[in-house]
Each structure stands twice: as structure tokens, then as C-alpha cells.
Image (tube, rainbow, N blue to C red; front, side, top):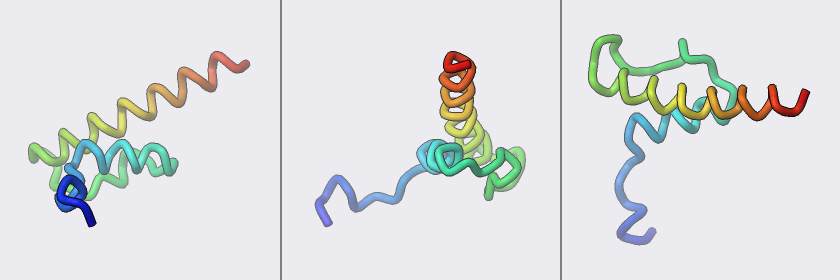
Length: 59
């Protein structure tokens, strides 16, 4: 494992990955109201919004 890959992904990155795997926003594993919860939700929203936009353009 390289040095730059040694850190665990943060909540934002994990939220992005969850959206890419079609997990619902309700799957957020962090405690509601925490900074991690907000970061995960922001990452999820970023990708989910982009996916929805690309799907609507294709119709």
C-alpha cells in the first residue's frame, strides 16, 4: 500500500461511494447531527444529484 493510500477515506468520500452503489441516503452510518453525518450526506447528495441529472438528460 502506498503512503497516500494509507489513510481511511473520510465521510464525504464514503457518502459518494454509497451513492455510486445506489445506497439510499438513509444508509448514513453516522450519528445524526454529527459533523461526519453532514459530510457523508453532502458526499451522497453530490453524487446522487449528478446521477439524477445525467439520467434526466438521457430521456
